[in-house]
Length: 139
Image (cartoon, rainbow, N blue to C red; front, side, top):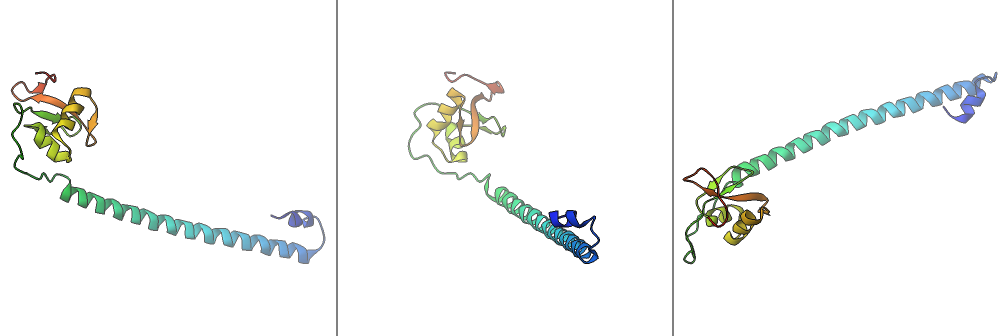
C-alpha cells in the first residue's frame, strides 16, 4: 500500500479510496503473474538441468571406461608393479595400464602412489596381488 493510500484511509474521498483499492488489486495481480511466471521458469530450468544430467551420464557410460590398448613403445626398465586406484577400487597389473586409463605417464602414477597425491583426479597406491593389500614403494 502506498503512502498516499495510507493517508486516505481516514478521509471521506470515496473516489480516492476506490483508486487505492484498484491500485492494490493491480499490484496483487501483477505479483501473482510474476509468481506464476517464476514457477514456470523454475520448472523449465529443472527440466533443462535434468536433461543435461542425463546427457552427461550417457556420455560417461559410453566413454569413461574406454582403455586404449597400445603396444609398449619401449622396453620397461624394471619389473611390472601392480597399482590400485583408491577411489574406484580398480586394480591394474602395471603402472602403464593405470597410466593409459587416466591418459597420463606411468611415472606420474608412481609419483602419486609414492607421495599420496592425485594423478588424473584419482589417488593411487601400489598393490601386491599375491598379498591382496597395498605395499610400500620400494617393495
